[in-house]
Image (cartoon, rainbow, N blue to C red; front, top):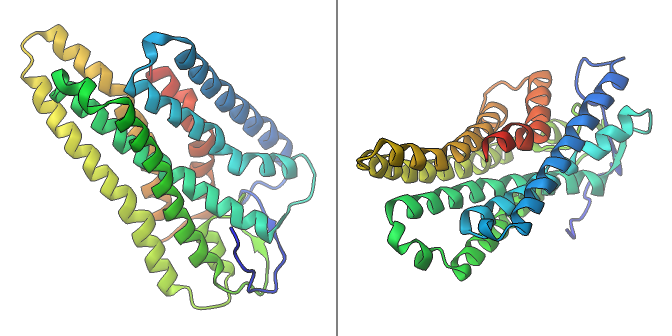
Length: 290
C-alpha cells in the first residue's frame, strides 16, 4: 500500500463483538463452521463451473468470479477473529488494520460492480437473445470482469488512504471484531467530519448507483418477460433471474443497514456484518443459484 503511518499507534487491539464476554468458545465453533461452509461451498461452485463445458457461458463466468470474491471476502476478518477467539492475542498491527480496511472495501466494491454486470448480462440474454453471443463475447466478458476489480481497487484505495491519513494517538482499542471505517474514525484524533461525509457519499453513492442500474436492467427484463406468450417461457425467464435477485437483496440490505444509518449500534452492526460476510454466500445463495 505504501501508506505512511502518521500516528504514534503501532498496533490496535480488537475487542471483538460487543457484549459477548465469556462466549468465546461458542463463537469460535459457530464462526469456524460458517467459514468452512463458505469456503467449501464456493470451491464446489468453482469446481462445477470449471469442470462442466455446458457452464462455460458468460453468466457462469461471472458467477465464477463472484465465488472467488466470496472465498476471499470472509477471509479478510474471519482468520484473525478465530485466532483471538481461540485464546490468542487480540492485537493487530497498524499495517494489518490498513490491509483489513482495504481488502474489505476492495472485495465488497468488486462484488457490487459484479452484481451490476450480471444484471446487464441477464438484460442482454432476455431482451436481446439473438445478439447475446455477439454482445457478451469472450473479450467483452474479460473487460467487464477486469473492470469490476480495477474500479473496486480505486474505490478501496481512496477510502483507505483517507481513513489512515488521520492521526491515531490512542486509545488503540477497536470496539469491533475487525478494522472497518466507522470504528476507525472513532479512534482518530483529528477532525473526521469531512471524511465521514466523503465516506458516506462513497460507500452510499456507489452501491446506490449500482442498485439503480440493476433496477433499470430488471425493469426492462420484466417488460420483456411479460411479452412472452407462453406461461412456461415466462417461468423459465423468471427462474434465470431469481437467484441473482435474491443475491442482490442479501448483498444490499446489510450495506444500507450498516453504513447509511444515522445512529450506529456496534452489537447490531457486528451481528449483521458477521452473518453477511460468512453466511451470505453460499449457504443461502448457493441453494438458490442452481
